[in-house]
Image (cartoon, rainbow, N blue to C red; front, side, top):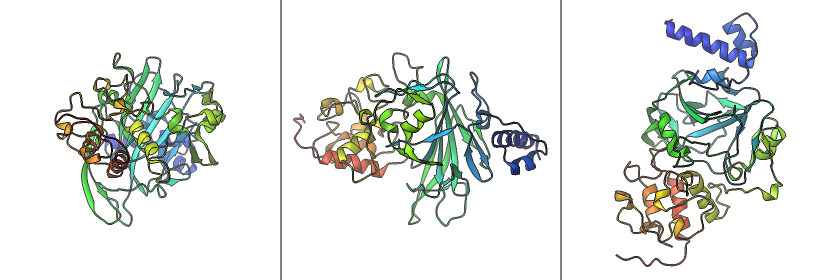
Length: 396
């Protein structure tokens, strides 16, 4: 065994066995009892391995969560090349996030948020280095409170940590053995193929963003580009039930009961975004939720796209600010020779779905976070535009 592999094996044994105190791991790694290692907050620096945080561990065929690490999900998630995501949050004892009805909760110093991107394996196919399922089905992913590593392929885990200086973002890429993830400050690319249920394949390049690219989505104020914040942990995204290991519960109520959230108002006062994928819900609510999470973090009054005059967050009135009959400021090839962002009743004449239906860097929107076209999301936006009434008086 090489020195590098020996070092990795030793680190993995210490991290996983100490974190979860599982007898099998202890036997494999050491005959001596190991101390329990809690989640570790690094107040500075960039730990080289995901396991250095002790938030999760690949152990005994599962990606397991450490004690007090809470999983969560969003009513409508960002699209990331059909990747599935395991989101977690952890906070030190004795502190809690402050509720906010509109913005990201005010998390205390020491908070660690992770998002692990992974794919289910194609049904009935042997595991290889590139084949992943194009599926929304998560029924095979989970084993207890963790991921079943026999059924999924881990790609990356992004860590957002709240330090005294603000939020820091650290990307980690999983190794081929799926035992640990290594810091990838400059990002990464991986050649993968999406495999549909009928066996058709769609090659694409999965892109892990570098640290500097994080601000492209997580920047909250262009007057201070270094300020970033999580996107998902907002009341309207989290207001839903989650199937925890000990039963279903509303996520905000769960976080409050655990002492992770304070100031939660009565349930009737908490906003809730629609589930974009639930066809029984109103198409406008679903489309606005989709645009809010996928576009609204840039397209708002303070975001990186504030100079476009196009705001796509949930708070924007359904008028010119939302793109209705609005000419682009400077979209170049991105317009496809269309005149306005949204033409009521005419998705084929509108810029918005045109840009969603592209994977060319100079055309596509969002600009990063995907290499493929989200067909179902695009069709939702087309259906929403088709339902609009009225006309645009646009000079040719």
